Amino acid sequence: MSNCAIVGVNWGDEGKGRMVDLLTEDFDVVVRYQGGGNAGHTVINDKGKFALHLLPSGIFREGVVNVLGNGVALDPENLWNEIEETRAKGVSITPDNLKISSRASLLMPWHRLLDELEEARLKDKKFGSTKQGIAPFYSDKYQKKTVLAGELMYPERLAAHIRDLAEWKNLIISSVYGAPEYTEEAINEWLGDYCEKIKPFICDTGEFLSEAAGSGKRILFEAQLGSLRDIDFGIHPFTTSSNTLAAYAPIGSGCPSLKIGSVIGVVKAYSTCVGEGPFVCEMFGDEAEKLRKEGFEYGAKTGRPRRVGPIDLVATRYGALLQGASEIALTKLDVLSYMDRIPVCAHYELDGEIVDSFPFPAALDRAKPVIEYLDGWGTDISKARSFDELPEAAKEYVLYVQRAIGVPITYVSVGPERESIIIRK
Ligand code: GDP
Image (tube, rainbow, N blue to C red; front, side, top):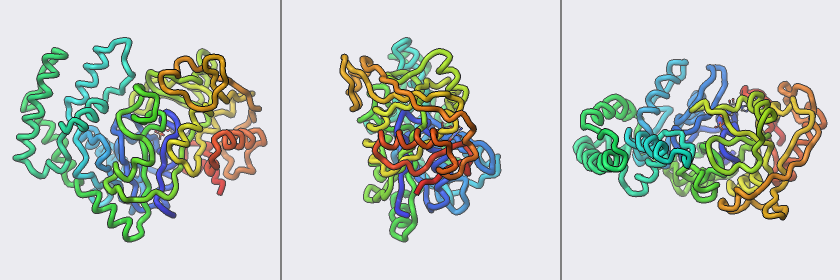
């Protein structure tokens, strides 16, 4: 099997974690290449239930090496806490199975603070940030005002660099937001409590990946969030601050020349969206509450109720195209089993016209969903392990979605557990 990327096709929370957990068996290396602790993968396996935010989902498989590439927002505090929590459930995490890129920028304590201060300033115009400091982090990264993880190995240079950055950040914190400045003690405490702990995992991941690829090792790239949150092609400005697309994986992992053989686009059987921004297919009222409850759609990081709707074929087709998806994993089909008839957002209506291509972000507020209905199947499908075991109406739903996206659906997930999967290839 060639290198593979598992990516989100929609707004995130599609169930990428369970797909990575399933497929890590076939891979030697799992790489996270973008994003930070602002979203979570939920993985349920023989060791328990885990909400991973930064750790790659291959961490549970013995023999798999996990990499945090240069494209991630490396938050030492969150990462260390996650390592400790995961270890406490019996998972071994050592420099042999976790490697952090020396070129990853560190998410500093002030990034989280600035995120909070800015969301508070915006009041009702807020973006719905998870307040994990991701936007301030990436802004600083592209201003070249971050510290690279590898600098932890150069203490003198590091101290001077952090002093310069703190001086600049404190100006903004105090004069723009009127908040208390960071002291040198607070920063030293953070360095000692968290940065020192992650130091043993830091290395040149580019060299590691290039050697791994050269010796025939199979690499799995794991993305966070989904196409519609991509900074360049998503629902700007309600996107995340990084590129969520498969095309960015080789760059964000540390080895730009790596090739990706297959891209598995993960699509949920219905839609969910966290935070603010246009969400054309949104359902409201009791219908939404029921779907939210059935799908347990509450944020992995924040516990916030997610906005829900039927599958949005216009957005999904666009998302799959952006990802260059060669196959689709359709997740959470079991959640729809309670519905007598299943709504799908088949088209948009924009200024009186039916459209099938995803509108420019500024036009999205004017788009209305065109809903069609498919037959429900009215029975539990969570035990189905082959396509033929599914009721006719469930099969028809899968085939309808496949036709609409134009990419083969090779996996149908019917439950959160590793084995609750139908493989169609
Ligand atoms: P990710 O960020 O894309 O990994 O998405 P989440 O962590 O939000 O995963 C979606 C949630 O749905 C998790 O709680 C999973 O355990 C769960 N899940 C994944 N696939 C299925 C499925 O096919 N059926 C059901 N019922 N739950 C699923």
